[in-house]
Length: 337
Image (cartoon, rainbow, N blue to C red; front, side, top):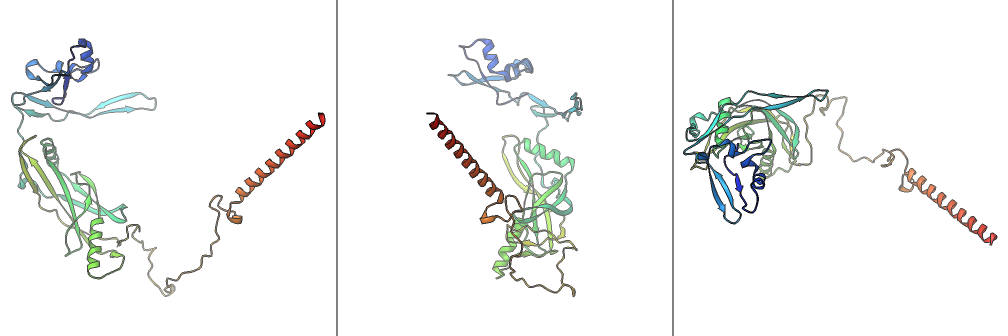
């Protein structure tokens, strides 16, 4: 059922049935009822907003009335024979709005506890050439409920992530800001860019921003922006305290976004041993034989794939044969004349 944003047009030049067909949300259809059939006449008004088109807006005075809403999940199961079985969850708690509904209570600082984060780990995909990390955010049921109430009353709740090298400046990181329980992915792009700027200030020109296994710290906090009700007075914003700090050894980070950095395994280590002397970075001539980009194995005579040469040869032969046949046919016609 919709309680706002429903416009009704009653054009005098049209029949009653035509007007009903033009306004299915108000009058309903063969498959669902309209607002007119769900509400009593004293529970709403139709206020004219355009005299020329006879358009009216449905309004409900929620200082006199209360609307109640509930919801449930509906899933259709399909078996191998294409037989469909609908399955429904239990109904949600009833939410209300209006005269007799529970009034929204803005969130207070003392009830906004700091985020609980754990299981810090590396995420397999990078972002703009920099590593990403992931951790688990534990969101209590009561906080999720308060977040829904906050959104319904025009406000918002977010989680913000910050990272730093121990003793350094905390840098806010790019991540999904929605308060979502479970895995949250955080990019270290902004930390890498900040460290690169600091290195430049210190006169360092190396592409290396952060060495592998250097410690990095992560923390989070909630941010709330709220009103005292839907379309109500703005209250302001507030932050929770910070979460506990999680520490981990970083992957190597480079300031070159195009490079894809991955952590080396023990087998991939380039540590020097007596049996493996250090090799200088010298430029060596390319000894590998070039392969054709088309077929993958021919020597590319005169720069073209051998199959292209074959195709050209076949085409030339066909042209010669056609010319010979045409000439013979013409000579034979001349003799008959």
